[in-house]
Structure formats: structure tokens, C-alpha cells
Length: 116
Length: 115
Image 1 (tube, rainbow over the protein chains, first blue to last red):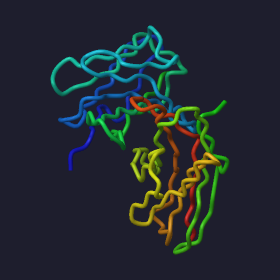
Image 2: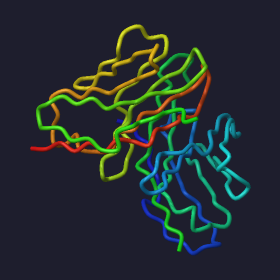
Image 3: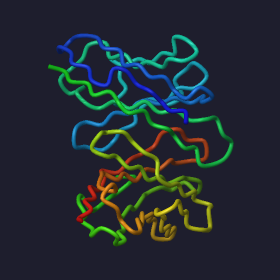
Image 4: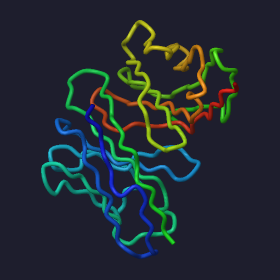
């Protein structure tokens, strides 16, 4: 069964460093998403991406964040200068373009980012 | 105001019993969708069940059913015949609007199944 994959599973970085989190969405999916979950808290939407551009973003997704689909398979989230509060689990999700419900998003296993 | 409210931080259920996890939502849109996801200790998010706002029947998927009460804006998850493997965090989420992209999640309920 096709699935969303994410690498690395765990990333440790120093405050102020740049990190790139990688995702390979399901191959025929056209909408891509990043969410984050700070430890013990709820999952929060960061950004959605369609047709090679951002379609929606939350207030969390400030200028420190960027997304890119550098080729036909990868979808990346870059944090330019990490802060301690960026420590969280980052989930990538994708969905097939559908004109009807359920608009189900398939989630990857997550990347745990630890900023020291 | 919170779009999704889960008032039960933790729940316990005896193995083989049924359990209801509560979820209420807040939206003024007529078209929306409600989802439940399971998050085991390994961390991944597993889709369980979906209910569209225009669906007249409650959604069911195996041992999972969604008790959708539109007037009360509630979308409770019912797990029948609980198994030890059901122990996990459960998140209710909402897609708001017909073409909306992002999901709003609740704070989750930690379910523990007791042998």
C-alpha cells in the first residue's frame, strides 16, 4: 500500500542552524501539507502546497519557514534559523485531488526535530 | 474559540468493552468534514474514520463508528470491542469549508485499554 515517507526520523540541531525536513508524498497525490506537534500538544497546521505554490499557511509559518518541491517526488520544509521552540514532531501529509469527500490526508510517520 | 474541543484528556476502558471519545466542533460553514486519527506511541498519525457534514448516516469503519449529532455539533468516536492495541492518543480534526485544505485538530484523548 502506498504511503508517505519522511526523512530523517529524528534530527538534532543547534539553535540558529538551518534544517531541511524531507517528505516523499504518495505518487499520485497533488496536495501536500506540513503540520507540527509540539510534545504533548495538538497537531497544528503549518502550510499547504498545490501546483508548485503555497495555497494556505498558518500564522506559525513565518519567514523562517519555506517549502519546496525540488523534483517530482520530494517535498521539503526548510527552517532557516532554528529556535528552541521549533522543537517538535513535523508531519508531512498528502492527498489526492478530489472534487468530493473525504479529502482524506495521508500522514507520514513524522520527523522529530530537537533544537539544542 | 477552539474549532475542535476534546474534553477528555484520558480515558480507560476494559478490554472487549465499548468506549466513546467525545469531540465537539465549532464552525459556521455548511460544508465541513470531521476526521478521527489514532496516534500510537510510535508517533504516526493513522486515519480512522470520516464524516461529511452532508452525510445523513453515521460513518462506520469496522469497530469504529462516528456518532454525528449535527445540531449539537458533536462527532464522538465509538470504539466497540476494545483491544489492547487500541491504547493510543486519539485526535478529532475538522476540515472547514468545501475546498479547504488544512485540518484543525483537537488536543486529543489518551485511551488506555485495561486487560
